[in-house]
Image (cartoon, rainbow, N blue to C red; front, side, top):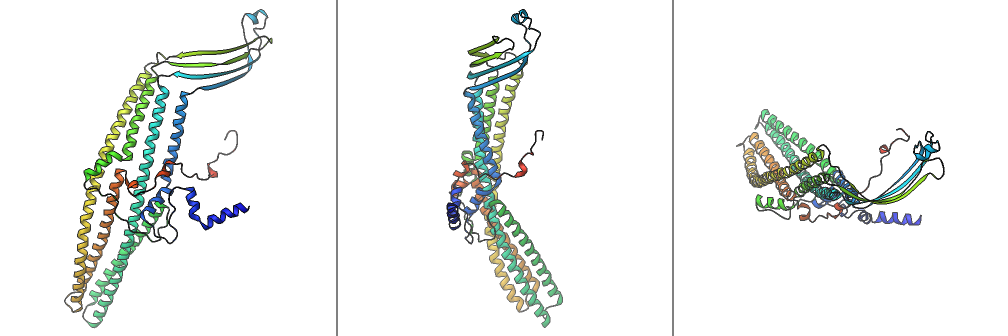
Length: 466
């Protein structure tokens, strides 16, 4: 009991230590600490169920490899029989016992060691290993894709916060303009229509704020769903990725070297090749070494029992199967060609994805530059129009237009800035080097995921026939 309370006290005083004992990932940031983009990535890797599902699938295939390798070793079969038997041979006929049922007992054990099976076991091992390698690449690809989603969610959350702040400022400035328009109308400098126009623009600004607030709430929920972290704390800005590619051709060259999905598809071709070798093995004979004792008691007199111990080499060869084996071999060859075409199609898709992402990335940089200049011009125009409005040279509508233009330019600049970051990180993700470039610890991906408690609803109801 004292030991229990001691461990509990350590856990309460040093929660990070208990976390480190359960995971090789860095612990999540403490409450009140700002969240970096690396924290967001680790949150995804720690908690996302899709990634855990892929890791469990890899565990399945590791056992499948061991099962395939067991085909090289021996197996032992034990058979026991008991019942009644009617036996008619020279002994039973001579004694007049050939028409009677007697108890019968039999017991045998047989060791079978495969010697030659047409490389069937080797083919199964090759297929299982290639399938395992394919899933390992897919685990890393899933981790990369989900990490990119987490980074995008981090970027989008910051963008939505900034846009909501801009909408708040936009509403505040429209309220001021409504007040100024009302004061000028009271003095007779403006009309009631000018006040109504200002009120109309205020309602539109309030509508934009409601839209920005809803988008922010969705962004917070999306971020929490992906990372398992709270979206209400302080978020650190997202820097550009460590490696920036000079052109699309450089990105695609790296894709051909390190894209995990492409590596997985190559392993799928090897899987199909192993299945073809397995189909071809049916055309060859098999040779086994079989040894073991056999005892049987056919019943009747006590001296009527048979015991043997055999050590034999056994050859089995199916010499005719109505063309089924040949058809299976041809089908396996077709599946291998299909897997090859699927891989080539993926290469084409990756090339298109690189080109489109690069184009959007460059366009976002140009848009951000133009919108940044537009913001400067909008601010200058707004200041000038406000001064002219105060001396009666500009109407309230002109000032309202400048406010709308400034708000639109500011929100578009935030969107373009976010798209620059998304494009840069997406290019890194396509190459498969996103996590290594960010110095993210990926060794836990090679381990089994944490086990969840069993849900009672998973259990079968008791009973023989349920």
